[in-house]
Image 1 (spheres, rainbow, N blue to C red):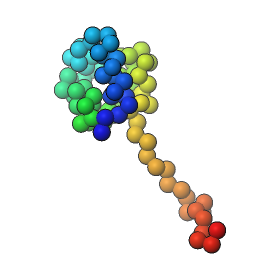
Image 2 (image 1 turned 60 degrees about the vertical axis):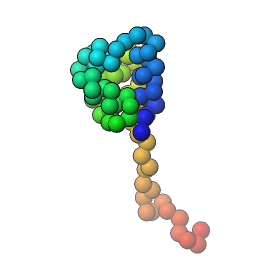
Image 3 (image 1 turned 30 degrees about the vertical axis):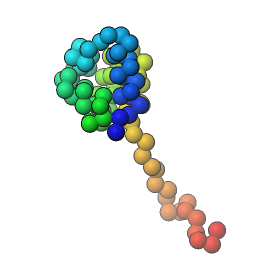
Length: 83
């Protein structure tokens, strides 16, 4: 699944004419790893997300890479069938 962060990063690189190899070097990762993240084959780890945020001077926030997960509702807050 391609994330919003991946789409923004692809656009960021295209607009600035930055190659995947050059950007990957800024983020201390391989070009292949960056390519996997951009194309949704790998999820960016928190460390990678912050490296991308730093390399883009904050234009692509680390939070763009975090998938939203459902938050469980404690059983004490669940409604009973009679409610």
